[in-house]
Length: 536
Image (cartoon, rainbow, N blue to C red; front, side):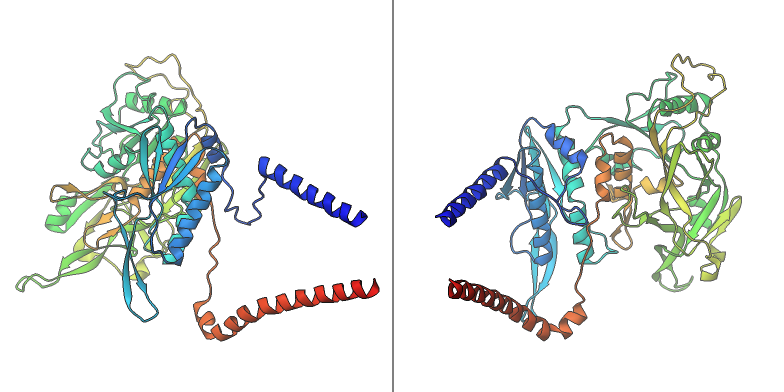
């Protein structure tokens, strides 16, 4: 009787625990990389929504193991998001892939035949009648297929959080490209402007004599100024920074003529001074008047036939077009491909202020060199011997964050301006300095703009577009969403050669081990029952 009562009490306790767990669910993420946990920024974003989010996952169909893993990770992430806000997951509907670029994968079957499979690695997010497309797959040509899929899974929380933030906000932030000093025109930055327009209202304009002219903008972009900035313009930009404004400086360190180089094979290279050296120095960086060459570079077609023969073009390395390395530790550049550039300079970090943190985002390779201006580029004397490329990791882009000192501290307000809200030290803010405007620039072909970073000769898309968009999102980020890109999920791959060599042993253990465990457990139960009933 007592034993029966104990069983009943135990069952009741188990049932009570189950009811409590259902009403107040608790979860512990015991994984080392916290792959099943959401960041605080995502939790806060979802908790602030007042209507359900609907997510249509288009990645479906006959998927291989890698893409099944990506789909499973997507569904698991959305399930976790539903704990903080209403997230409805639906299957892809007919016609839902219209206008989307598919991904084609080639699978080898057991009989050796190759099968082509078309998939759509996207999700469609809807909120309050608005919708946006979320790309689930990242494709970095320098990584293997497994590494790209793993990077895609690492990036899932960020792309969904950014998409939800984008379509749920009530107002759209504004950014501006500065004009009036020979900057890249609208056609030159058409592609990055189009990409940024997904997140911001993008304006262009010349500075007026109003000190607060830039205050409405979240980020100001100065791309390739060729003419000196006046003291009035410098003051307006400086006070914009002092009041918490964010600036992306993309400035060249030298001036040269590409037309002279194409026509005569020779051009002088002279320092480019746009009257910003003292201002940038005050903020903590200096753009050097040097020209970087790198053996890791783009190739250009060169006619090698001679004067009399028919034109024959062969790709030759163009060392003045370095392929810049991206930082693997910064959320701005994590997972971003190499960034293509043209005629770049280097950046030095200066000043020892602990109030400003400095982080290098782009750098040259381990086989690079720099030429100090004034100099000249003579195509007939270009050296590509590796022994001349002895420098490594020359910094080209630096991110700054902290409290900056004003370049106009202890100086009078420039003539023509009136300022009653002057600051000599900034609020905590961020800036990004890039020593080449070419990183933002796109080419045109047959009247159509090419993507920024697209090499028309090889057909390779480099990481320029991703770098610029991530950089501006980072500068404008007040919610900490960009930090979600720091998530790392360890990739644990099998040794294919060892697995193939030991496949019989692995198969035997895989089949025998479960049977042995079941037999062992049955034997233990038999022994316990035998002892219990024999003694009783």
